[in-house]
Amino acid sequence: MRMSEGVEWSLHCCWLLAVVDRKRAITASRLASFHGVPEAYLTKILKSLVDSEILSSTVGPRGGFRLAREPSATTVLAVVDAIEGTGHHFRCEEIRQRGPVPLSPTACRRQCGIAAVMNEAERQWRRSLAGVTIADLVTNAATQSRARAVRWADELYSA
Amino acid sequence: MRMSEGVEWSLHCCWLLAVVDRKRAITASRLASFHGVPEAYLTKILKSLVDSEILSSTVGPRGGFRLAREPSATTVLAVVDAIEGTGHHFRCEEIRQRGPVPLSPTACRRQCGIAAVMNEAERQWRRSLAGVTIADLVTNAATQSRARAVRWADELYSA
DNA sequence: GAGTATTTACTCGGATACTCGCTGTCCGAGTAGGGCCGG
DNA sequence: CCGGCCCTACTCGGACAGCGAGTATCCGAGTAAATACTC
Image (cartoon, rainbow over all chains, first blue to last red; front, side):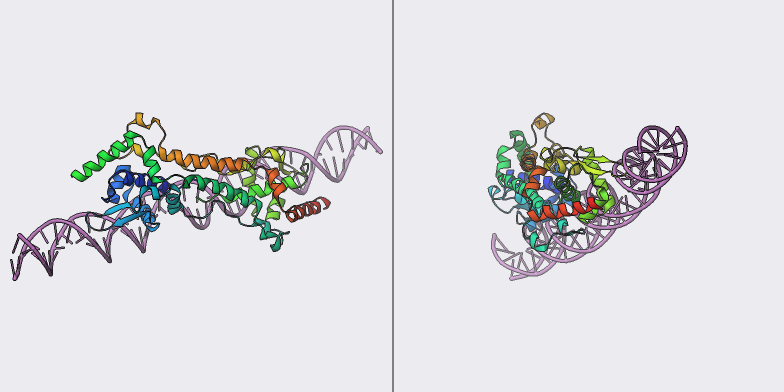
């Protein structure tokens, strides 16, 4: 049950886009270079974020990606869901209805107790992630982190 | 980020072992039959539980598996960890140290803010799972579920 | 100098291979119960 | 009848294939800016 690598990349990209000027788009190539990750695959990840309306993309010269909304309007949970999908971690296969002595369908109206426990835990997980926004990530970031991002972005603009 | 199927099987097996008489071992073959899952693979799963000292196994005739401790002494979290491993869901690859403008190692002493958020969410998830034991699962189960398990076990004993 | 058609370079997006972990299976080592023999 | 020995059937455990999701990559369609030309 490891989380996809794309989640880390996505959050770092959102963070970077929030730190630098939002009016200026950043290309997938630049984002990949800054983070030291393969460009082609990152593009695929970014597309998922666009599909979820977390980022917006502009094609052609001077194009690239930018945040679709204010940083405070996008939660970490939304980013995770965009990459990992919204399906439950624990998928109840209803094995209580299998075997030589299956439980009657009427008794299965009530959700399996095991699934209930797992889903409740996942709910707590989602609640925690829903409480943090991209803006919070920027606020809590170390000064040095923000500084290097801004410096890098300035070099981009001057060139 | 889907959870392994073995988790569901493990929890159902632990539940069943807790419901029936604990002094009597149940073979992997019987457990697989009751739940309608492949026996060979279930054996592999059960071995993980034995390695984690959640179950104990007895070989030879009249052998099988049984709970290693009281049902109230084993949490759902322990079962999940036994199958999925204790590694973090979110593995921080420290991409802030990569790229053309890497963050200085001294600044990386403090944990990456993104990793901190993800780990906190996982902590909430684990806390929720740690609050439920196998005994709780038995208590909360529907009467019909317990009844069919006991009936099935009785047939086993009589044979 | 201003407007416009054209060029052009640059962007994203979908179709296409590759890898690793979960899934599934098999047969062999080891053991404890059950039967047999002897006293 | 009772005790001990041997046999046997049954159990788990580790080694061996198969598949699907995630990972990684490439090239083509589309676009908006820059440019050159005309009025």
